[in-house]
Length: 339
Image 1 (cartoon, rainbow, N blue to C red):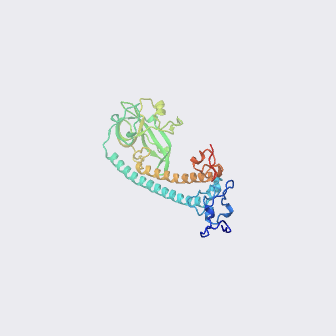
Image 2: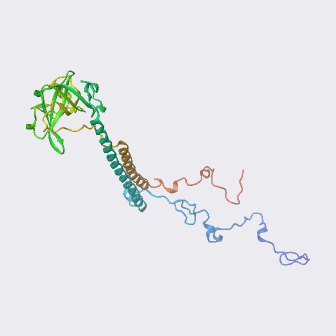
Image 3: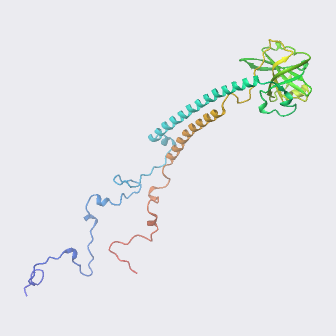
């Protein structure tokens, strides 16, 4: 039988076997493509960078680079933190201006309410003092400015001067005289004088006084040389005796009248009058919001200085937890598991 180059001639066309379908002889390993035979280009970049802390610019789903910790000063001068500072300072300035506007509104509305209150108090009829407050009882806050009347006699021998009291931006003295009534001793501020030598004696005999109530002051340094630095019932009772009212009367009218050249005081004011509480609360809220803006920037600077973490980015658990739970590396391609 004629034999060709590669085998016996069977009268068939030459058949060239496909190397991919040729089974190697037993005992010879199958050839596998090497890394050197792999084509260059993007195909080799599949899987991303070997360093998980470096983001591949061509991979939008890559891991962002980690920010290392730094000092507060370095974090504060970073461009984005400076931009945030400018924005938040602008917000704080707006809040401050709104708070100032609310404060002005509180003063305007408070002044209008106070003027209305003063007009009502002055136009109100006087009531006997014992219907409002009795001697040796606590002075209520709503009694300030109440228009009352009392009948008694002045004790000129126990009259005192109260120094360093202002009236119309001038400093002078108050004339404080005890009015002894059937129920007790009522301190009466009869007038204001610029100098002690202008103090006049009170009207003699039974007098009817009308005026406005004011709460007693805290105790001062005591009574000496005909003067006291505080209108305090707790101090006056030691000199004038009792029972004594825990407030005092700011004189408005007297019958019989006292000398016309004595300057009378105006309607007493309770602490806090002259401001609208609602607008005052709004002003405080705006100022608190402004301070929050500054504190927020400080908090952001602190977070920026901390960075994204204290550990090595390569040691962070960026991989799938299910992969870490595996029993070991995957078997090599082409190998078979053995029992």
